[in-house]
Image 1: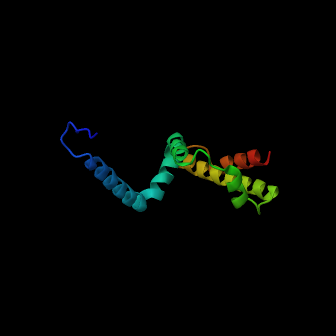
Image 2: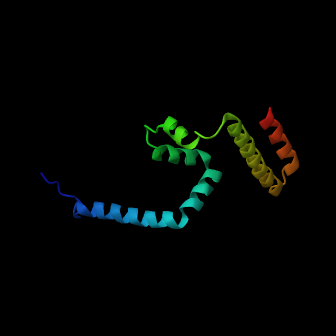
Image 3: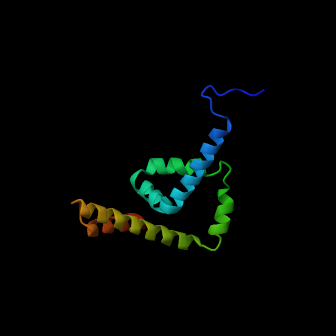
Length: 118
């Protein structure tokens, strides 16, 4: 049984429109994707996380990912990486605060390092 579209267009037009949108979206992503994702992560973390959660499969195997990525990394190396990342994040935050008239970068970095060590 075939249903008639009350607007008079053929049923295939929606599929063509969807395909055209995906082609345009892919071109836009290739041109601006990394920049837009970085800006989204920086400016709207909740939306960024929702996007990640919609794209990551529900049955994502974290243990398999860990075994592929972290097999050769010791616990001590992981701790060092965390300290470095925290320092980097503190540096970024301090730079942003300095640009906006906030506290000095040296105070923020010192505070972040103390928190990372403890």
